[in-house]
Length: 127
Image (cartoon, rainbow, N blue to C red; front, side):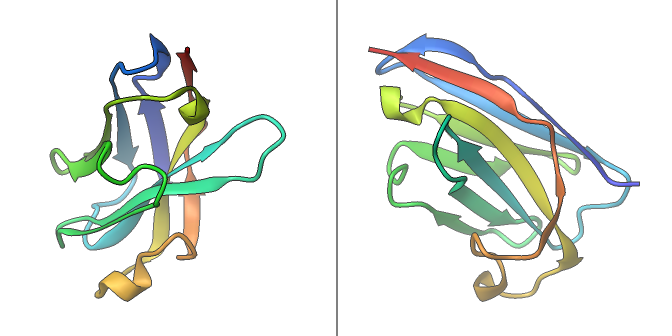
């Protein structure tokens, strides 16, 4: 059974930083597409960043480029370092994992087959 748990959310002022972590259990990462997504109240879910674990292929959404960094910290953890936070970054942040292994960056965009999702961690940025 695949299980993803996010942590690290909280409340910060604009310009501050937070570091989100996603810890997985249930199967080895292998070459999975892992993604961070967010959803604000009344808005559609938005892709933030993706990474191919053990493959070093990374993709960012336009709204976070240059401010957020996704990385694989160890065999079980993917993190999202968020700097220069803005009030519009306020949302519930989720991590997700693809059902199958992937072998190219093309297979790891925001439309990948993300079959497994965490429960989310809240990020609130005040002005």
